[in-house]
Image (cartoon, rainbow, N blue to C red; front, side, top):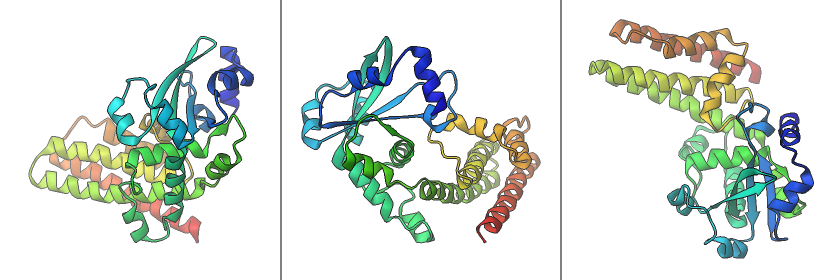
Length: 277
């Protein structure tokens, strides 16, 4: 919240300015969100804005969207508008209420305490792509509503950050093991560059597993290295850097790097299991 307020003050934008520019109908609920509200934004960050509207109002607005990411808009059923607020252009995503309600309801059904529940939701929720699922749930759960639409705000407020972190963590834990198998297949075929690429994806999955398990949720992977480097986890930092700074993709070194990732995952899994006891 402090970073968001500092950004708004620096731009000379007040809460009233936002309300006046962004809310044009009683059928609209506006939510401010993004990395600044999450607390890890930087000087290059801005505000992300979600506008949630009635399904009927969404149909009326459907021809007014900007052409950027047009196919994604059609596929995921949202509209992009660029709105100027005191000289600052804000990217506003408009979503129908029924879609947001369905997303939150489907997430509430996931049994994150069972491997079956995690596997069933691994690629997303019914009707939602995984990237969209993660982005919307994460951003809405930290969102700051600008107006008082009790029904929508209650829906958003029901998203559990603890559950979301655990779900994302367990998904990435599975990823880390699957990518280990990919690494071994490429290594056996002596496709060393592909094996190394699998290792970079594997260490990403492994650090996500640990970061998410400790409640650090992010949906844009550009924040990963910042999260790793700002952590006090020396083993995670060392393993992450060794994989990414690798200048030798010969077989013996690749095996060494994969073993480092195995050791890191096993050590962190033991720590996390101990915390849960």
